[in-house]
Length: 353
Image (cartoon, rainbow, N blue to C red; front, side, top):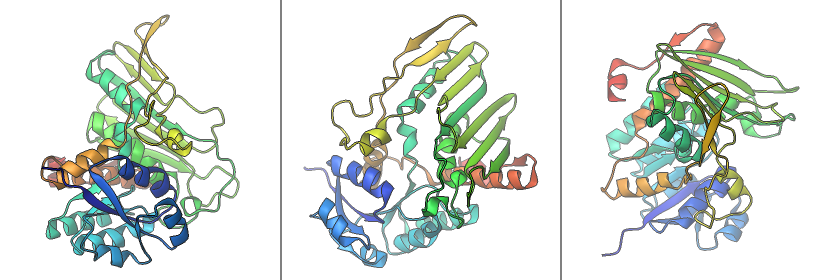
């Protein structure tokens, strides 16, 4: 018997839909890109001539042919669109950040549970080569007990661009843009932190929203440092991890976004192959290197297809996405109040994590 093909509709046809979601769906046999909601119908038809084009999200939500709705729209629309799609009986894959607040995230989860639908947040960087390589090395105990973990995604964008991500509206800025990636990866390794400290700044001339963020997660004697900025012309080391038995250094980040932007189709030769080797320092004067593991962000879509067919678990449990939002909210509060704050989750939510 042939495997069932899951019919998907994209809501929004901006950068992340064109570069990530549409290529991922098109490259996997278990998925079909059935439709796209966009005001740029000509552009959509030029790229995807076989797709149905909707000018209104509700038209996609009520189309019985669609199984899953992928919401890849500005952050301040995530909450109403996700709730409407779930209420219409669709499964939902929601771009990060989950929502604008922890309360909105909780309401989306409650809506999914009430209607018996799967809700997944697009934490695709769990399948980045750099993260997979670091996590595997830590699991093997090659540097003993971790005491200092740095994860950095820096960019050099000195000019403020005219786009909603860099505007002054709700959900703009790097805390909501890059923060969820950094936080989700950290939580996958270390679990829920005891406290969160953060500093957030607007550093570029004419900045309308935060373009620099520094978050510290506390785990007993261990400190997890998550950083992103917009004025790093030379880049930064992607991961630096110190332990009781040595140090790990992963200099470069995952190549998949660059490959997609260059026009590579997911699954082609060298897809996700990372030439930057992991450095393992076991003393102050010498180190050795090991190959980086390959990355493949499509794994989220593969696992989600199995979950929708009843053959596997949701790859991003809603409570895990909720925990990411809790850290983001705690970081914002910490930056405002200039103090460390506890994670704003209930005891029930912590136990479910």
